[in-house]
Length: 252
Image (cartoon, rainbow, N blue to C red; front, side, top):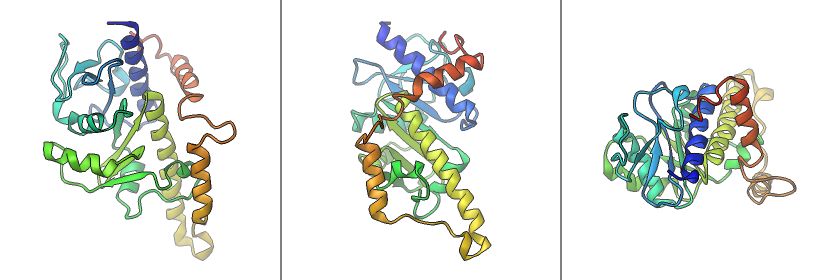
């Protein structure tokens, strides 16, 4: 493989380890997939049966848009699990990395009628930028793909009702930071809702819509010194993995 693919593999393996380090993984389930650089129909995904904190660059499996293996990997692939990812990759050329989790906060908030509310600065990243997809059972049917794509639209996140969260990004760094921001915002929302039973004074304070518009425009318009998600954070996150003794393990 060329240097670009190897770099993609190491970044994707790091993303798996970071999700695990936050406790947002779900044993051997869920996936983070990435388009192989320079291709339109080749993707990297985790071996079925390995925990997120076991993923390495070399164990990632190369597959096509239908989930079929393209190399001599000894590992199995959960092709059914790629139904969601394949649909998004095919419809969104900008979605080089697609991340899906079943974290407690994301499932709880995705199951609420209004989804993520603008109750924190973290949440402003997603103001008017969250899609909703109603639960249809385990995502095994190919005909669900069109509805997933429709519901995601051009948003950076899809709240899958009663199921979990899907984030997209140009690379694993961006997809991970969308997860990080959403998880923080969702956790804050749940904490505020839990205290609201204390009476009127404990009710969350909702900023006016025009303020939310401005904050979202600041984030996505890179106002001041704001950069795209992952640009500043990624190298620090990789150093955290190294301090935790996970390098060069995930790079192998």
